[in-house]
Image (tube, rainbow, N blue to C red; front, side, top):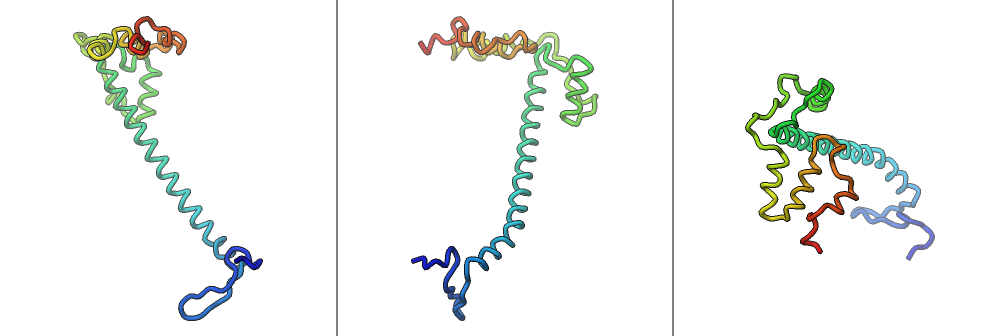
Length: 154
């Protein structure tokens, strides 16, 4: 039972002898450890955040390269090329080039891959959401009302 000694108060048996430790001395020891533990935890959190950023950047790069396999999705303007080089630490010569002229469009690819398993309206919605120009993508409201996209859910 606590007799007013507080946390860490009372007798401590360390095997050889019994010592008295009060809450103040225990707190002082914990306080001395706190900066070291806090620093270690901060360093580990920073390392994990950096690793997460690198993983996300790798995934973004893979997505960009795969999108560039479709006509019209490669970096076109100087500002786009410059951004990609800065973002991924690339030499301009390493930028993905234009897709071959005979390659099907991203819209056609998405519809071909999704239609066997999903309603054609849903495939059309997904393809529209992947439009290169954000202004050509449907809003959330438009997506919710997209014709034929949600027929399996009704």
